[in-house]
Length: 282
Image (cartoon, rainbow, N blue to C red):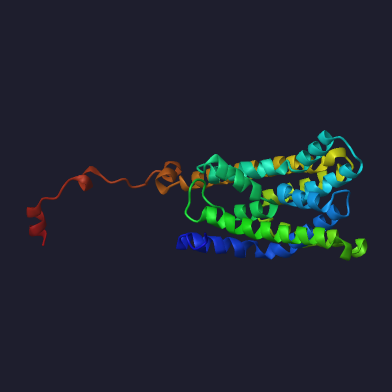
C-alpha cells in the first residue's frame, strides 16, 4: 500500500511519522500504564485486549475501570466514558473543514484514529481547509505511528502486568512525558489563556462525579481561547484604524491648516510667453 502512494504522499506520510516521533515515549508509557491497569482490574485478558482495540482512548478506559469493579449499571459506565471523550467532538469539529470532501465511511475511520497529540500536531501545521495534496497522508503518518505505539504498549501491559509492581509510578511517568509536548504547543496568547483557565477549572472541579471536570475544563478552555482571540482581533483592528488615519494625513491635506502664501503669483506671471519673445530675449 505504501508503494502505491505517490511521491508527494509518501513524503507527507513520512513527515507525519517524523512529526509524531517525539511523542512516542509518552504514548508508550501511557499505553503501558493503561494495559497494566486493565489487566489488574476485574477484566479478563480477552476483555482487556478488546477494550484496547475498540476504545483506543486511555483516559476513558482508566475512568471506567473502577466502575466495572463497583458493578455499577452499564448506563453509568457509558455516561462516564462519554463525558471523558467529549473532547473528541471538538477535535472532530476542528478536522471537519479539512476532510469534509471525503466519504462518510472514510471520515469515520479517520475519526477513530484521531487523538489528542495527533490533533495538536496537525493543527500546528496551519493547513488550508479543503483538499490539499499530501495533507491526508501527513495525518495518516501520525495516526499510524500513534496507534501502533499505543497498541504495542497497551497489549504488552496487559500480557506482562504481573511483572510490573504497583509502586513503580508509571502513571506519573506517562503524565510527565506528556507535559513538554503540551507546553511546546502554547504558541499564542489565546492558547496560553485556554491552558491556564482549563487548568484552574480542572483542579477546582476535580472531585465531581463521572469525570465531569474534564468536559468542564474543555468548555472553559474554548471560551477563554475564543475570548482571547476576539480581544486580539479587536486590538488589531484598532491599530489598523489608527495607522490608516495617520497614513491619510498627506501633505495636501495638511496644507488646509497652513498659513496662506504671502506673495501669491500675479496674473502676469500666469500669462504664457510666446516662442518669438523667447528667441528675441536670447
